[in-house]
Image (cartoon, helix red, strand yellow):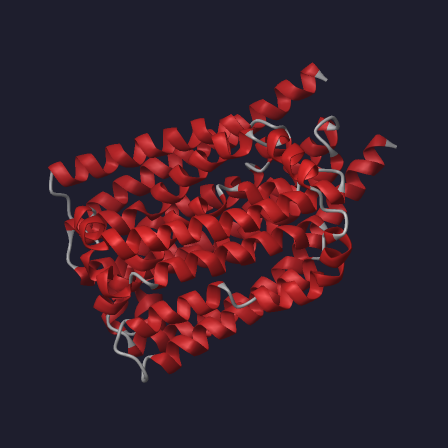
Length: 428
């Protein structure tokens, strides 16, 4: 019976993954169709400013909710889960307002301090982007909790279309690179309206049961999340976007544009499959419960095998044919991005496999593990950048060192997940 339950869980995860991937496939296909058109109407310098903007926005996003939205998935009670959703929305509103006021008063000093002068004229888009992206993230957590993956798949397609179409249209209506930035903000919040309409009946029922003492109970129950998950997530996004930040300091904006397109392209398979697998895996193991570690282990093993099979061929194609593919797809002026992708693709397969399964630590209530793992990653990245800057490495040299360092980190992360499952099983 235990074996049958584990098989059923694995099949359910596979079904949920396929639902999300089908939506994400449409979304990323649209994104891939738009991207070659976008690279032909915007210059590498424009794309450099855009990459810097998205990097800064990604770093600010965890501040908006302190990563509190993950607590929507954990409670068994829908009432408590809705309380956590309300807290997350309130945090988003307050923190967005704080960021807006700080940038309004001190943007010149802040942007010069962190070498972000190219964004001075576009500072007002950062608070707007924080609010739209965070609101969508919170609503998508509720959809993940309900395992309504169909609506999440639909909204991902909707977002991709809005983003691609708006970037192209605004290229002829606004001064570049403003069209890229505004289009990105519109894409981030493109699915809010559909998710709100879909879940509004649920919200109306839950609003009648909302009590201040219950909200306070949830805040106390999950108080460790902002203390551990938030700094961990902040370190994660900081290290993830550090190549763009480093490039903007060490090289010209054109090089930042090439590197930005390289990372954008590498993010496509993660966004297509990795995020979908992560949501489905998180939802299923949370439902299984941390006490049933045997079933969680079987689902995890199932996921890892499938991800390896999916990742191996695209990785090899990018390694050997990156420059040629980029010249054909995005235009000859973007061939250097293909060179960078062929170097970075080595770490793609390791990231692809490990990114979804780290959700295990949230279900096992080991939030501090995220912090330790991301601190390790921060140390690796800091070492790479310090070495590259002091020795004045070329872009290719430091990207090679970066790829090797992150590959080693992802391998260690996968082994640590395996060790955690094994140790929890022996305790049980």
